[in-house]
Amino acid sequence: MSTEYKPHPEDALSHVEEPATVYPVNPPTKSLDLLGWARSNLFGSIPNTILTLVALFLLVETLPPLINWAFISSVWSSATPDACRADGVGACWAVVQNKYRFILFGLYPYEEQWRPVVSTLLYIFAVAVSCNPRFWSRRLLVVWAVVVFGSGILMWGGILGLPYVENEKWGGLPLTLMLSVLGIALAFPLGILAALGRRSDLPVIRSVSVVYIELVRGVPLISVLFMASVMIPLFLPEGVTINKLLRAFIGIVLFTGAYIAEAVRGGLQALPRGQYEAADALGLGYWQKTRLIILPQAIRLVIPPLVNQFISMFKDTSLVFIVGLFDLLNTVKTALTDPLWRPYYVEAYVFTALIYFLFCYFMARYSQYLERHLNTGVRR
Image (cartoon, rainbow, N blue to C red; front, side, top):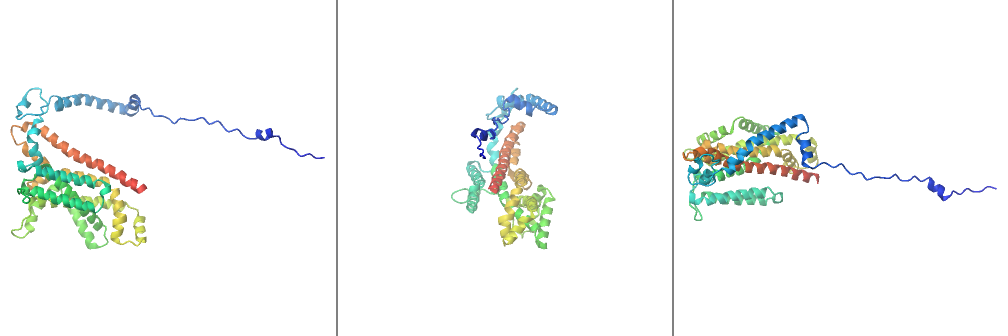
Protein backbone atom coordinates (compact mmCIF):
# COMPACT_ATOMS: atom_id res chain seq x y z
CA MET A 1 0.00 0.00 0.00
CA SER A 2 1.43 3.36 -1.07
CA THR A 3 1.16 6.36 1.10
CA GLU A 4 1.18 9.91 -0.22
CA TYR A 5 3.96 12.10 1.12
CA LYS A 6 2.77 15.29 2.71
CA PRO A 7 5.47 17.89 3.33
CA HIS A 8 5.64 19.32 6.75
CA PRO A 9 5.00 23.07 6.94
CA GLU A 10 8.38 23.58 8.53
CA ASP A 11 10.01 21.84 5.52
CA ALA A 12 8.34 24.33 3.16
CA LEU A 13 9.50 27.26 5.23
CA SER A 14 13.02 25.88 5.25
CA HIS A 15 13.24 26.36 1.46
CA VAL A 16 12.27 30.05 1.63
CA GLU A 17 15.34 32.26 1.51
CA GLU A 18 15.52 34.83 4.20
CA PRO A 19 15.69 38.39 2.84
CA ALA A 20 19.09 39.95 3.08
CA THR A 21 19.48 42.59 5.71
CA VAL A 22 19.63 46.05 4.09
CA TYR A 23 21.59 48.60 6.00
CA PRO A 24 20.89 52.24 5.23
CA VAL A 25 23.79 53.93 3.49
CA ASN A 26 24.10 57.62 4.03
CA PRO A 27 25.14 59.61 0.94
CA PRO A 28 28.60 61.08 1.12
CA THR A 29 28.49 64.49 2.64
CA LYS A 30 30.62 67.33 1.35
CA SER A 31 32.44 69.26 3.94
CA LEU A 32 31.07 72.77 4.10
CA ASP A 33 33.38 74.17 6.71
CA LEU A 34 35.65 77.03 5.76
CA LEU A 35 38.85 75.05 6.29
CA GLY A 36 37.69 72.21 4.04
CA TRP A 37 36.57 74.61 1.31
CA ALA A 38 39.90 76.43 1.42
CA ARG A 39 41.86 73.17 1.32
CA SER A 40 39.98 71.92 -1.77
CA ASN A 41 39.67 75.17 -3.69
CA LEU A 42 42.65 77.31 -2.70
CA PHE A 43 45.35 74.90 -1.60
CA GLY A 44 44.44 71.74 -3.51
CA SER A 45 47.69 71.67 -5.47
CA ILE A 46 51.06 73.41 -5.57
CA PRO A 47 50.11 75.79 -8.44
CA ASN A 48 46.84 76.70 -6.70
CA THR A 49 48.70 77.32 -3.45
CA ILE A 50 51.21 79.62 -5.17
CA LEU A 51 48.44 81.57 -6.93
CA THR A 52 46.48 81.87 -3.68
CA LEU A 53 49.49 83.22 -1.79
CA VAL A 54 50.28 85.72 -4.55
CA ALA A 55 46.66 86.89 -4.64
CA LEU A 56 46.59 87.29 -0.86
CA PHE A 57 49.82 89.29 -0.98
CA LEU A 58 48.41 91.63 -3.64
CA LEU A 59 45.17 92.08 -1.70
CA VAL A 60 47.04 92.91 1.52
CA GLU A 61 49.23 95.40 -0.31
CA THR A 62 46.49 97.13 -2.34
CA LEU A 63 43.13 96.74 -0.61
CA PRO A 64 43.80 98.61 2.70
CA PRO A 65 45.37 101.65 0.96
CA LEU A 66 42.53 101.68 -1.57
CA ILE A 67 39.89 101.61 1.15
CA ASN A 68 41.69 104.35 3.03
CA TRP A 69 41.96 106.49 -0.12
CA ALA A 70 38.38 105.95 -1.30
CA PHE A 71 36.44 106.03 1.98
CA ILE A 72 38.33 106.76 5.19
CA SER A 73 40.53 109.74 4.27
CA SER A 74 38.41 111.03 1.41
CA VAL A 75 36.69 114.41 1.12
CA TRP A 76 33.01 114.00 0.27
CA SER A 77 31.72 117.55 0.36
CA SER A 78 33.41 120.85 -0.30
CA ALA A 79 32.54 123.91 -2.35
CA THR A 80 36.17 124.47 -3.27
CA PRO A 81 39.11 122.09 -3.79
CA ASP A 82 41.04 123.65 -0.90
CA ALA A 83 40.02 120.87 1.51
CA CYS A 84 41.40 118.28 -0.90
CA ARG A 85 44.88 119.79 -0.97
CA ALA A 86 45.79 118.95 2.63
CA ASP A 87 48.40 116.29 3.31
CA GLY A 88 47.09 112.80 3.95
CA VAL A 89 43.76 113.44 2.25
CA GLY A 90 42.49 110.64 0.06
CA ALA A 91 39.98 110.83 -2.76
CA CYS A 92 38.34 114.17 -3.49
CA TRP A 93 34.76 113.15 -4.21
CA ALA A 94 33.82 116.81 -3.88
CA VAL A 95 34.56 117.13 -7.60
CA VAL A 96 31.59 114.85 -8.26
CA GLN A 97 29.43 116.85 -5.88
CA ASN A 98 30.24 120.09 -7.72
CA LYS A 99 30.24 118.76 -11.29
CA TYR A 100 27.69 115.95 -11.30
CA ARG A 101 24.93 117.95 -12.95
CA PHE A 102 27.15 118.91 -15.85
CA ILE A 103 28.51 115.36 -16.06
CA LEU A 104 25.03 113.85 -16.19
CA PHE A 105 23.23 116.43 -18.33
CA GLY A 106 25.88 118.37 -20.23
CA LEU A 107 24.88 121.75 -21.63
CA TYR A 108 21.18 121.25 -21.01
CA PRO A 109 19.72 124.39 -19.30
CA TYR A 110 20.21 124.15 -15.56
CA GLU A 111 16.66 125.05 -14.57
CA GLU A 112 15.21 122.53 -17.08
CA GLN A 113 17.30 119.53 -16.11
CA TRP A 114 14.30 117.80 -14.57
CA ARG A 115 13.23 117.03 -18.11
CA PRO A 116 16.21 114.81 -19.02
CA VAL A 117 15.81 113.15 -15.61
CA VAL A 118 12.22 112.17 -16.43
CA SER A 119 13.25 111.15 -19.95
CA THR A 120 15.98 108.88 -18.57
CA LEU A 121 13.52 107.28 -16.15
CA LEU A 122 11.10 106.67 -19.02
CA TYR A 123 13.75 104.79 -21.00
CA ILE A 124 14.76 102.78 -17.96
CA PHE A 125 11.11 101.91 -17.38
CA ALA A 126 10.68 100.79 -20.99
CA VAL A 127 13.80 98.63 -20.78
CA ALA A 128 12.62 97.08 -17.51
CA VAL A 129 9.22 96.25 -19.02
CA SER A 130 10.87 94.78 -22.12
CA CYS A 131 13.04 92.50 -19.99
CA ASN A 132 9.99 90.78 -18.49
CA PRO A 133 8.80 87.92 -20.74
CA ARG A 134 5.21 88.43 -19.58
CA PHE A 135 5.07 91.68 -21.56
CA TRP A 136 6.37 90.24 -24.84
CA SER A 137 3.40 91.10 -27.01
CA ARG A 138 2.28 93.80 -29.39
CA ARG A 139 1.41 96.00 -26.43
CA LEU A 140 5.13 96.39 -25.85
CA LEU A 141 5.34 98.34 -29.12
CA VAL A 142 2.73 100.73 -27.75
CA VAL A 143 4.80 101.22 -24.59
CA TRP A 144 7.89 102.04 -26.62
CA ALA A 145 5.99 104.41 -28.90
CA VAL A 146 4.66 106.31 -25.89
CA VAL A 147 8.12 106.41 -24.25
CA VAL A 148 9.91 107.64 -27.39
CA PHE A 149 7.22 110.22 -28.17
CA GLY A 150 7.04 111.44 -24.57
CA SER A 151 10.81 111.59 -24.24
CA GLY A 152 11.07 113.61 -27.42
CA ILE A 153 8.52 116.13 -26.15
CA LEU A 154 10.39 116.45 -22.86
CA MET A 155 13.82 116.85 -24.40
CA TRP A 156 12.90 119.20 -27.24
CA GLY A 157 10.02 121.07 -25.65
CA GLY A 158 8.43 123.88 -27.60
CA ILE A 159 4.92 122.71 -26.65
CA LEU A 160 2.89 122.35 -23.46
CA GLY A 161 4.66 125.38 -22.03
CA LEU A 162 8.11 123.75 -22.18
CA PRO A 163 10.92 125.97 -23.51
CA TYR A 164 12.53 124.69 -26.71
CA VAL A 165 15.99 123.14 -26.27
CA GLU A 166 17.93 122.28 -29.43
CA ASN A 167 19.57 118.86 -29.48
CA GLU A 168 23.04 120.43 -29.69
CA LYS A 169 22.66 121.06 -25.96
CA TRP A 170 21.73 117.48 -25.13
CA GLY A 171 24.43 115.49 -23.42
CA GLY A 172 25.51 113.27 -20.59
CA LEU A 173 23.67 110.16 -19.47
CA PRO A 174 20.34 110.87 -21.28
CA LEU A 175 22.13 111.17 -24.63
CA THR A 176 24.18 108.01 -24.03
CA LEU A 177 21.10 106.07 -22.98
CA MET A 178 19.04 107.37 -25.89
CA LEU A 179 21.66 106.52 -28.52
CA SER A 180 22.30 103.05 -27.11
CA VAL A 181 18.71 101.99 -26.39
CA LEU A 182 17.20 103.29 -29.62
CA GLY A 183 20.27 102.14 -31.53
CA ILE A 184 19.81 98.59 -30.27
CA ALA A 185 16.06 98.71 -30.97
CA LEU A 186 16.65 99.61 -34.64
CA ALA A 187 19.94 97.78 -35.27
CA PHE A 188 18.50 94.45 -34.12
CA PRO A 189 15.82 94.11 -36.86
CA LEU A 190 18.28 95.55 -39.40
CA GLY A 191 20.80 92.89 -38.46
CA ILE A 192 18.20 90.13 -38.76
CA LEU A 193 17.15 91.31 -42.23
CA ALA A 194 20.80 91.53 -43.33
CA ALA A 195 21.49 88.01 -42.02
CA LEU A 196 18.47 86.61 -43.85
CA GLY A 197 19.46 88.53 -46.96
CA ARG A 198 22.96 87.08 -46.91
CA ARG A 199 21.47 83.58 -46.91
CA SER A 200 18.88 84.40 -49.54
CA ASP A 201 18.70 82.53 -52.85
CA LEU A 202 18.10 85.80 -54.72
CA PRO A 203 21.47 87.05 -56.05
CA VAL A 204 20.65 90.75 -55.83
CA ILE A 205 19.50 90.63 -52.20
CA ARG A 206 22.41 88.40 -51.23
CA SER A 207 24.95 90.68 -52.93
CA VAL A 208 23.57 93.84 -51.32
CA SER A 209 23.61 92.21 -47.90
CA VAL A 210 27.16 90.93 -48.30
CA VAL A 211 28.44 94.32 -49.47
CA TYR A 212 26.76 96.12 -46.58
CA ILE A 213 27.99 93.70 -43.92
CA GLU A 214 31.56 93.38 -45.14
CA LEU A 215 31.96 97.08 -45.92
CA VAL A 216 30.73 98.26 -42.51
CA ARG A 217 32.57 95.58 -40.55
CA GLY A 218 35.78 96.43 -42.36
CA VAL A 219 36.07 99.93 -40.87
CA PRO A 220 36.09 101.22 -37.27
CA LEU A 221 33.05 102.96 -35.80
CA ILE A 222 34.82 106.31 -35.67
CA SER A 223 35.17 106.17 -39.46
CA VAL A 224 31.49 105.40 -39.88
CA LEU A 225 30.57 108.35 -37.66
CA PHE A 226 32.96 110.60 -39.56
CA MET A 227 31.48 109.55 -42.89
CA ALA A 228 27.95 110.03 -41.53
CA SER A 229 28.92 113.52 -40.41
CA VAL A 230 30.80 114.60 -43.54
CA MET A 231 29.50 112.53 -46.46
CA ILE A 232 25.74 112.44 -45.82
CA PRO A 233 25.31 116.23 -46.22
CA LEU A 234 27.10 116.02 -49.60
CA PHE A 235 24.39 113.78 -51.01
CA LEU A 236 21.53 116.02 -49.87
CA PRO A 237 19.99 118.79 -51.98
CA GLU A 238 21.21 122.29 -51.39
CA GLY A 239 19.61 123.85 -48.34
CA VAL A 240 18.63 120.47 -46.83
CA THR A 241 20.53 119.43 -43.72
CA ILE A 242 20.35 116.64 -41.15
CA ASN A 243 21.27 117.54 -37.60
CA LYS A 244 24.34 115.86 -36.18
CA LEU A 245 22.41 113.83 -33.60
CA LEU A 246 20.49 112.04 -36.34
CA ARG A 247 23.66 111.54 -38.37
CA ALA A 248 25.44 109.96 -35.42
CA PHE A 249 22.40 107.80 -34.71
CA ILE A 250 22.31 106.53 -38.31
CA GLY A 251 26.01 105.67 -38.17
CA ILE A 252 25.63 103.74 -34.90
CA VAL A 253 22.63 101.79 -36.20
CA LEU A 254 24.37 100.83 -39.46
CA PHE A 255 27.55 99.78 -37.68
CA THR A 256 25.84 97.72 -34.99
CA GLY A 257 23.41 96.15 -37.47
CA ALA A 258 26.29 94.69 -39.50
CA TYR A 259 27.78 92.96 -36.45
CA ILE A 260 24.39 91.69 -35.31
CA ALA A 261 23.84 90.28 -38.79
CA GLU A 262 26.93 88.09 -38.53
CA ALA A 263 25.94 86.86 -35.07
CA VAL A 264 22.44 85.96 -36.26
CA ARG A 265 23.84 84.28 -39.38
CA GLY A 266 25.93 82.06 -37.13
CA GLY A 267 22.77 81.02 -35.29
CA LEU A 268 20.99 80.29 -38.57
CA GLN A 269 23.84 78.09 -39.77
CA ALA A 270 23.99 76.25 -36.45
CA LEU A 271 20.41 74.99 -36.77
CA PRO A 272 20.07 71.38 -37.97
CA ARG A 273 18.82 70.94 -41.51
CA GLY A 274 15.91 68.94 -40.14
CA GLN A 275 14.34 72.09 -38.70
CA TYR A 276 14.07 73.61 -42.16
CA GLU A 277 12.76 70.38 -43.65
CA ALA A 278 10.18 69.97 -40.87
CA ALA A 279 8.92 73.51 -41.48
CA ASP A 280 8.65 72.82 -45.20
CA ALA A 281 6.77 69.59 -44.48
CA LEU A 282 4.18 71.58 -42.52
CA GLY A 283 3.49 73.65 -45.60
CA LEU A 284 4.66 76.93 -44.04
CA GLY A 285 5.66 79.82 -46.24
CA TYR A 286 9.09 81.45 -46.05
CA TRP A 287 8.15 84.20 -43.63
CA GLN A 288 6.00 81.90 -41.48
CA LYS A 289 8.80 79.37 -41.28
CA THR A 290 11.36 82.04 -40.46
CA ARG A 291 9.25 83.85 -37.87
CA LEU A 292 7.80 80.86 -36.05
CA ILE A 293 10.51 78.19 -36.22
CA ILE A 294 13.88 79.31 -37.53
CA LEU A 295 14.52 82.73 -35.98
CA PRO A 296 13.46 81.91 -32.39
CA GLN A 297 15.87 78.99 -32.26
CA ALA A 298 18.68 80.84 -34.01
CA ILE A 299 18.46 83.87 -31.73
CA ARG A 300 18.39 81.66 -28.64
CA LEU A 301 21.69 80.12 -29.76
CA VAL A 302 23.45 83.47 -30.16
CA ILE A 303 22.27 85.36 -27.08
CA PRO A 304 25.83 85.70 -25.63
CA PRO A 305 27.38 87.32 -28.76
CA LEU A 306 24.32 89.54 -29.21
CA VAL A 307 24.51 90.85 -25.65
CA ASN A 308 28.25 91.30 -26.05
CA GLN A 309 27.57 93.51 -29.06
CA PHE A 310 24.95 95.48 -27.12
CA ILE A 311 27.45 96.12 -24.30
CA SER A 312 30.10 97.17 -26.80
CA MET A 313 27.64 99.54 -28.46
CA PHE A 314 26.70 101.13 -25.14
CA LYS A 315 30.35 101.92 -24.48
CA ASP A 316 31.12 102.97 -28.05
CA THR A 317 28.62 105.82 -27.86
CA SER A 318 31.53 107.79 -26.38
CA LEU A 319 32.83 108.13 -29.96
CA VAL A 320 30.06 110.54 -30.92
CA PHE A 321 32.42 113.34 -29.94
CA ILE A 322 33.62 113.12 -33.56
CA VAL A 323 30.38 114.86 -34.60
CA GLY A 324 30.43 117.32 -31.70
CA LEU A 325 28.03 115.58 -29.28
CA PHE A 326 28.65 115.46 -25.53
CA ASP A 327 27.89 111.98 -24.26
CA LEU A 328 28.59 110.87 -20.69
CA LEU A 329 32.34 110.43 -21.13
CA ASN A 330 32.79 113.68 -23.03
CA THR A 331 30.90 115.71 -20.43
CA VAL A 332 33.40 114.42 -17.86
CA LYS A 333 36.29 115.56 -20.05
CA THR A 334 34.66 118.97 -20.48
CA ALA A 335 33.97 119.30 -16.76
CA LEU A 336 37.64 118.68 -16.01
CA THR A 337 38.70 121.67 -18.10
CA ASP A 338 38.07 123.69 -14.93
CA PRO A 339 41.63 124.27 -13.67
CA LEU A 340 40.51 124.20 -10.02
CA TRP A 341 39.20 120.63 -10.24
CA ARG A 342 41.46 119.27 -12.96
CA PRO A 343 43.90 117.54 -10.53
CA TYR A 344 41.06 115.29 -9.33
CA TYR A 345 40.26 113.70 -12.67
CA VAL A 346 40.63 110.18 -11.24
CA GLU A 347 37.60 110.59 -9.00
CA ALA A 348 35.49 111.95 -11.87
CA TYR A 349 36.43 109.06 -14.14
CA VAL A 350 35.78 106.52 -11.37
CA PHE A 351 32.28 107.96 -10.95
CA THR A 352 31.67 107.68 -14.70
CA ALA A 353 33.12 104.17 -14.85
CA LEU A 354 30.72 103.10 -12.10
CA ILE A 355 27.75 104.28 -14.19
CA TYR A 356 29.00 102.37 -17.24
CA PHE A 357 29.64 99.29 -15.10
CA LEU A 358 26.13 99.26 -13.64
CA PHE A 359 24.46 99.31 -17.05
CA CYS A 360 26.84 96.77 -18.59
CA TYR A 361 26.58 94.46 -15.57
CA PHE A 362 22.80 94.55 -15.83
CA MET A 363 22.94 93.53 -19.50
CA ALA A 364 25.34 90.68 -18.74
CA ARG A 365 23.22 89.32 -15.89
CA TYR A 366 20.03 89.65 -17.88
CA SER A 367 21.51 87.65 -20.75
CA GLN A 368 22.21 84.80 -18.34
CA TYR A 369 18.66 84.96 -17.02
CA LEU A 370 17.26 85.02 -20.56
CA GLU A 371 19.25 81.95 -21.56
CA ARG A 372 17.96 80.01 -18.54
CA HIS A 373 14.38 81.16 -19.18
CA LEU A 374 14.38 80.21 -22.87
CA ASN A 375 16.10 76.86 -22.26
CA THR A 376 13.56 76.03 -19.55
CA GLY A 377 10.74 76.87 -21.92
CA VAL A 378 12.21 74.55 -24.57
CA ARG A 379 12.53 71.64 -22.14
CA ARG A 380 8.91 72.03 -21.11
